Figure: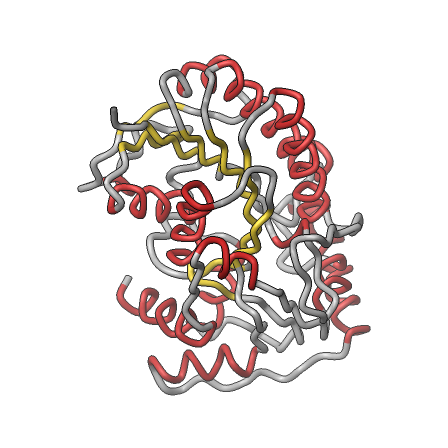
Length: 326
């Protein structure tokens, strides 16, 4: 009998690319979304659309009936919120609890839990899956650390077969709503980036992550973590180089010192208290990313899963081409 795969967050950037990968692999796919009326990202895709809100216990249990393999992709992905504890940290932890408990009740056979390299951390060294981040200043990072740890506790409690994957900064096609990562690239493409923040990003093509996630289910070993990233990170000058490869005319903005960036982020965070609009830059991001390269040892995923991501430069060029064609 054909197995049923379900993807939560199926209309998100990674979720939608994973849906496409699974369909191309011949899988029977159930796409879990919060708005079943918004079908634009599923046109031409042979999949079943179901309501699946990760904070709705009843809906999640109903959506998982008959499912053999669960790919839990849905998560809150933002660095700023009016109430970061409730809107980011607790939302992701509670969502993990609800989804995995529902998976156990529905007798799902396998779970691939999508975490993030935020749960691994970065310090300029090539970190591997054995490393756990201890960051607490950034709400998103904290949510991913605590959520993945909660997932491992629940997998043991419910005796669930589970692997986790840790993607880095995903870029590439099929993005209905732009993530913070994709917004950063879009700002470069539209020449809207006012300065060089001296951040280093570990970019990976979202399609390669989707392939890696599928391989984690079919080739991964229960109880293991798999980093789905690239070995090296990219500076802004390398991003600008990729942009100029697609369309000439991009210049490298001036680099600002860390103290000035912290001042700017402080002012932006102060402004959010007045306007209620998200801050474009927050101090925890400056402290996390300024001048620190995000390097990872991806040999385990390469060896066990056959993971073979395209280079960061290729991923960036493809993304700038995607934006030009939109």
